[in-house]
Amino acid sequence: MPAPEREVQPQSPQADPPPVSAVSMKDLLASCAAATAVSTPPRGEPEDEQGLDAA
Image (cartoon, rainbow, N blue to C red; front, side):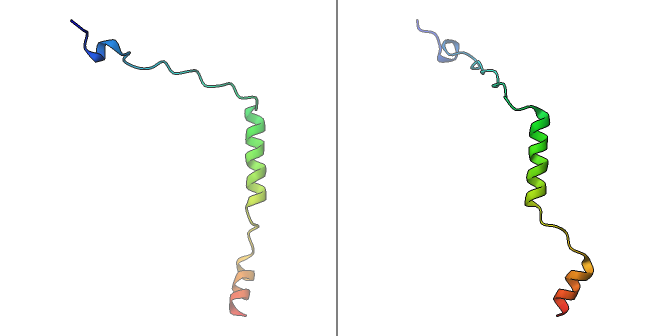
């Protein structure tokens, strides 16, 4: 008599270990900080923004 399917197939597939990154955490954090600094516009003074809206 054949075995039920759940006994034939493994319960959970074996997951491969995650690949090792060639980038250090220090370099990763530095690149994120640099990207944020470049992509974030400078904050203007609230008085300057009000002066532009009134003109």
